[in-house]
Image (cartoon, rainbow, N blue to C red; front, side, top):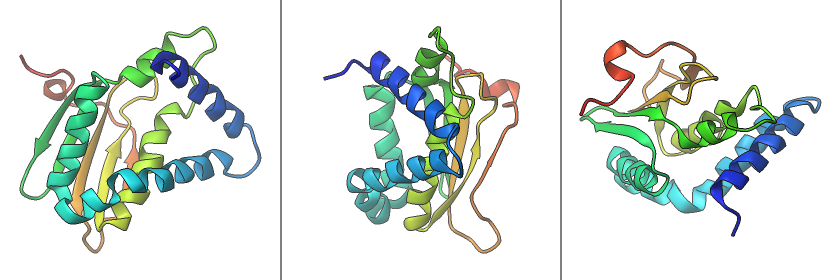
Length: 161
């Protein structure tokens, strides 16, 4: 099995290569990743909704040792990544990160959410910082999924002890 630090660096180089190709090769790749993730999470998301998403990302938080908090509310799930281990590994690399490295998360997550009747606001914060915030809602008319860059409020930058 390939160690995660090598895998993440390999992934980064694939992203750079595809980003340099004509058309939307990188976006197509992200959508293919999403298609493959369906067998892992689609049923869970459909059957348990926000609770199932919480369970999935709680497992990821532990497995990948993420500096992440999850806030399951009645109307949404808020995932705040305070220290993304994936981007941290990519930036600790003399090859440099793909300029769209962070886009792979919304690139695979949004298609899955929309297939299960949910939308999201995905704040990438800053592509050079290993943090982001994902807020997932049941789908509603007039609220499509969106990806944006905006600094987190100071009280959300780091988890409180």
